[in-house]
Length: 295
Image 1 (cartoon, rainbow, N blue to C red):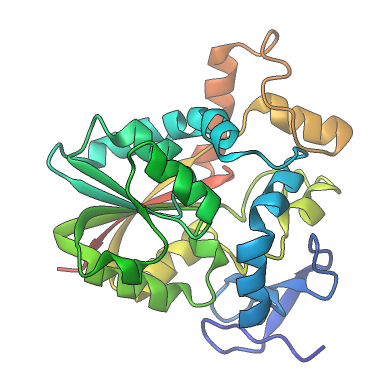
Image 2 (tube, helix red, strand yellow; image 1 turned 90 degrees about the horizontal axis):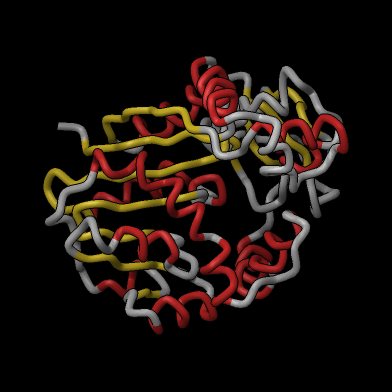
């Protein structure tokens, strides 16, 4: 294998931090000593990437959660709690007159939740099965930005998209072309400073966490740096998706799927306190960012 090169700053000075990547035995995870980004090397070439997202991605993601592939209808139903989780975070940044676009909208479960709070919702989704389902329930969903024919929006959403991109800075910069004046971009990515990676250092978690589809793994610092370089003013907010039960199961059994298992023992107050402690230290599992174009 050739020497790793940071695709964001071109430095070849890197620290090896992860030797096992799910479904990509030829790849490893490195941390750039120049800009601190954690990146996968090598990554899929463009043809491999196109084939992966066209034919494998939905089943790949289902397999990572220990589930079988879900039909669009069952996917929509099972992900509704995730859409509801997002609402309290995003509502302060929404206006009733907003036209909204979600990039990577899946079956439209989040856009369905947003319909009562904004003027219009539109989706962008490469999976034809998911796109067809969203269109069938009245959520206009397109295949690519090129299909939007110059339409602009007040809010763009990107949930778990940025880590998949070959060039996140260039892509984020280009999104300004689809923003109205005073528009906003809201996104979430996994946090590479997740407590399960470190300091807990759960042996089975790292090979699960590092995956072939995630070309970059962001921290609070590196996500902020990337978005500033793309031309935005940034507000960073820590978020925690997974509960204490999930973390206990990782510790005891070394596998995912533990959400809610001990809900009869762990009180809501304990869950809130645990999540708040992780967020305060930026050891949470998720980074939420709100962006506006620099004035």
